[in-house]
Image (tube, rainbow, N blue to C red):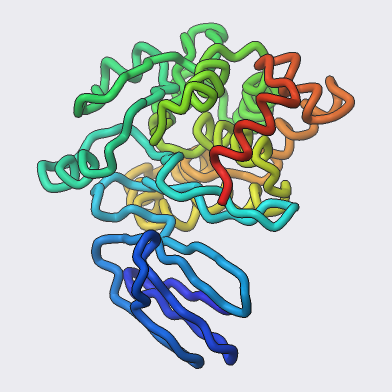
Length: 303
């Protein structure tokens, strides 16, 4: 089975006979072989039955939220051939949208929002509140005058251009350890307070590491996780280009900060491997997740 997403159009194709259902429906939308496509304006989760196997698919991007880079990290296949459940984990930038977008977000029935931004970032751009439990816990410790701020304006104002790369790498090496925001994230997962939306300012750095931790915990391989992380560059491409045009002489530095870079997330991954013998030990030492809790998380959040 091959699946291709073209904007809101989903194209399914297989030479074998297959059936496609909306996730919980008993009657198929399609049954046959070859190509079938559907205009997916409302973003459903589809269940695909083929050759005795079940697979799920949904558009990862929730455009109807009208929030840049608002994504579902469900659907990824684990190393033991299961899939991360859809509609459990959403990642995004700040929750600022129009009336139509907020109405759509409300329909997602989000139970918990974890805001990784600093106090200054939160005050500058306040999240919408739609009846969920809201946890404002900055993910970055205060370093110098930045006070945990990680928006590009603060970085450009306080970090020398030639030091941006080394500063980012320092932050990424720091993020996975002794981090109260990520501790709360795993606590919410264990308490099943989902769907969970976790976010920062642009939905790419602090949020990208959080996404890595969830997917790695559930058994997704690091190559796939890196693809999820780098996808921010694709989903933010138009916005980043517009910001770059306005940046003038600082275009190169601004674009660097508005994009994600493989070496940054790799720095987080490598630092965990440097400090701990394996990822399970890391989970236990940092978050108290033992084998029983790990099995619970995988049973709960995998198809």
